[in-house]
Image (cartoon, rainbow, N blue to C red; front, side):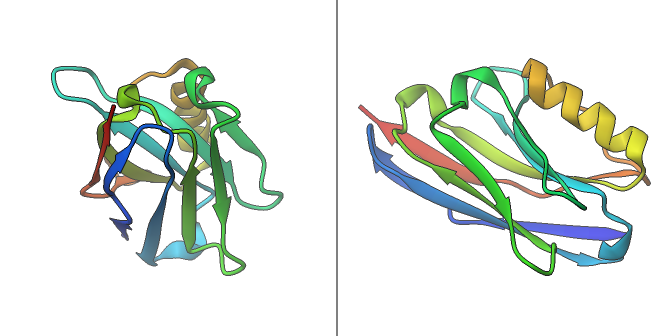
Length: 137
């Protein structure tokens, strides 16, 4: 089991910045990727960014490219999402996800690249409870 806890959400004006954190605990050695998804009110969840362990390769959903940066700490148990030039369209609950097997990470990565909801939580994919980000114009 892997437990994910997000933090760092809040309210900010358009053009501002926020930095989200996601800390993983439990059987973290089994995790091969961690990423961020978001869900705005009345909309489907969509992928935002993902980082793979063992090399740090990253992928982003097109609307956030150049504004958001995903990174991880040296222990590879915490990831961050630096969000700059925030827009009102970025308002959403942001969820952290972690994948164990490489095929689970492939599913998460495809979801991020396509802005799709991503797989449901199971023994190979874990989700946090979310942190709210509100951007006012």
